[in-house]
Amino acid sequence: MEGRRALASRLMDRAASGDEAAFGELASLVQDELYRFVLAHGLCADDAADATQETLLRACRRLKAWRLGADAVGWVYGIAMNVVREVRRRRWRSRTAEVELELLAGADGPTRADGDELAVVAAALARLPARQREAVVCRFLRQMSVRETADVMGCAEGTVKAAVFAALDNLRQMLGSA
Amino acid sequence: MNDEDRDMRRRHGELIGALERLGGLLDGQRYPGRAWPVERRRRISLPGVIFRLTFGAAVAAGVLLAVAAAYWLAFTRTVQPTAPGKPPVVKRVQPPEKSADQWPIPTDVDVSMAAQVRWALPTAPLPSAERDPNTAERVDWSIPAAAFPTLKDLAEELERDVAEYTEPPSST
Image 1 (spheres, each protein chain N blue to C red):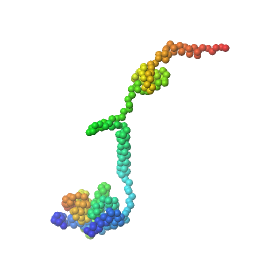
Image 2: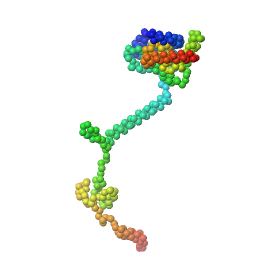
Image 3: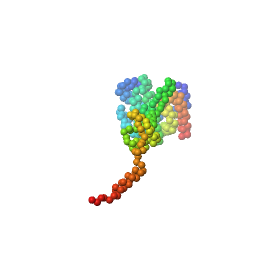
């Protein structure tokens, strides 16, 4: 993982210096991770594909804002987080995006019972407030550290910890009452 | 993993495990594989169009206002310099004031024309004897009474006209 991050940062440095092919390599390197990241935030497959592409386009347009030597993956995830928020704002009327994880859990679970349990967890996750859901998805579904989550969400580490604790409490209550 | 993480996992162990398994389901997902770079057609939305039109109109109005203000500042005011430290005195430009007897009066007119000029300037009577501003010569502007026909003259003239038109043609 660290090797991929370092490679991504080097590619981003080259792209910012005018190497057009480097950004294509970077896109190939991170696009699957990005796609899973936006899926984890509850977007349906079509929206997730669009959001992934939009993220890469924005990153390409903002190459001039890139600071040499910075963490490229974290930077791109930060852009992706903003794109996800925009998509969710556009789709707030329809709940279709919210059930994608639930369907995934029900269909691909290792066992029927486990799949059912995960579907319940996914449904509860979708009912969390946006900030708490983002924190939990980054921390546990995408296995990011508190620091990385704070960078992606654009807030302090303490905020992330508080949001995660609150989210877990909420989830336990929801699953306990379910 | 620090103490905080361990404590959290102890308290919420099962739940975190379920969340991690849920995230694990995504590991097999792959980006549908659109080629990079992708040219996308821009979506045209009604709010976007309205915003652009409004913004454009506001900018155009601003430019017009700026031009009008610049014109007003440049051509309709004069700024009089004052002592250092005091704000300049700004005055509107006024047309030059002229009194009635400053208007140029033509000199090569007959008396009846002069009378018309006098009627055209009712606020101030013509001076009876004054220097002509154009020729600097003393001019007598007084109107001779003989220039106007009297009522008696008019009546006689009328009688002559009536007699001329009513007299029967002479038989030759």
